[in-house]
Image (cartoon, rainbow, N blue to C red):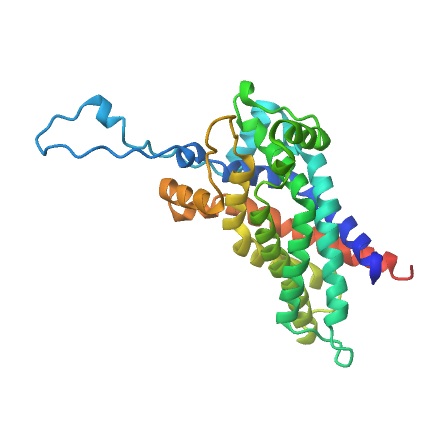
Length: 319
């Protein structure tokens, strides 16, 4: 397999990432809904005598309820109305770089590990080994691609900020350069633990489940090895990956997007702090914010990824 597996996975990932980029942007915007109320410190009113009059100042100590959630269609229409249809592709240069670094690495490593761990006699690989290969490949791929991931999240989220607060990155290179200068090199790996955890979950659930569903379909002779099998197995894999990764994805998005002012404490101290503040302010289901666009994006992304991958493999078969 060697380098060919990396090339095949990289090409398929870039095609899938670019074709589903608008859905990913909408997902990011939805995951950031209500964030201001989550990040803001919660002040509790001091104890008062039972018959004491409620003053306006005291009333203001209670946390304000989060704004109502907006659905994916409304978010998409709002983006188009405010910034034009082209805004749906904000940050696409970061997507290309991310897929080039992250997905090429994870897809290639998964194939290498799958080749090494497959039983040479039976030509089969246990599900546990597939999951293990996915965890290793996803973690390494995420560490390599984290700078592009941070840039992508910020570029996608920029349009929801007031004009005076927008970062206005011109490209992924400009984003990485500005972050390095103003926030230090370390900012390029902000949220890297979350990125690695999410990537391990996504890769293990996505790649392992695709192989498992595909083998099951062929073994039971439900369909032949063709487009129908690839679409069915990949959509099922996308569903599994979405359910497994969405909570980590929400926290990752918020940590990466947070604005750290010089001399001030950051809105979140880390992943656990972000998760606790989000749950306290918005409830546990806030961790599944953006799930509809997640599955709406993850489903087509996974289908395009594996259908393209199978076609690229055919083209590269004799190379």
